[in-house]
Image (cartoon, rainbow, N blue to C red; front, top):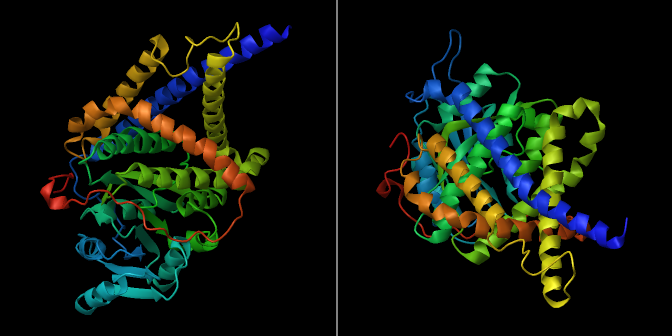
Length: 435
């Protein structure tokens, strides 16, 4: 085979992979998500709380809230946690070396709220150790962990505890985060992203057996299972992904509950979004490298699909970057098999087809999550920008993150105050299934 034919074939392989891989995954997610809905959600749509079976009782839970410089959000978050409609619970707020007035606010709240306990870590230790400190103090075996800016739906806890009561092998139950700030274009696009990407993928992965990750902002844990695997890892950038894999490698089950709602704030600046997604990408690669050996262990066959998906996603990102680079080169050094009009990014028939598939995915996700988040249809128009902006953002973060993980130094993952976007009061938006 001549070099010309070889490179021509290689070019078309990359172009085909760039096109067919997201199309295949989108189809897989849609089918898996619809199956999950029909099997697990449809029959309980009208229920405020799940119905217990004979012999089942609502056991006590501990709500853990690690806080670092949450002075602006602490009162609202703690208040929502203390007002959950659950018969037996405690709230544990962990101040992780905050440098603002977070500790003062938590102490004042604890004086008037007997269900609230405050743990103070004198120095910033990172979210993983803050969660461990709260778990060790918790008096209950069921833990519900939320971020310091998250607002719990009143009935969220019921839907998580149901899984622990009914399924003894359930070690974690991840909830359904909904975005509160929707005033900017970035905020509106992320509303659709959390439905069509995050929510849909979790439904599909659960249909096919295992979850890649719980949501760090809202997850319930069985404390005995977390203790068994050594709690959260303090040196992982995304402790939520890492604990998910640790539990599943030890044979525990990780589940998804779409009716376990929590309202969160997301970045609405380019800088804030970049920092968040780069951390997510780096954390994902850390977990991929840490768990790569599961592909060579027959006892972990249940995790092969997730690992292969991670590898293929990484290959897609680098394939896209390579094709784009080759196309730029062709603008200055024309090659017979690669011409400037064969751009991998300029609109053509294939890109229009991909955008159509993406909008179909958004439509299905809007139908699924519209049961819990009223008003999603208002953001559908903005979803046309998702493939252009977020795919490109995820591509760049993936290409940037891998060498950082491979050649960087592993160290304690400590808190960095994130961009929380434009703050809005939840009760002014009329969102949620339960008011």
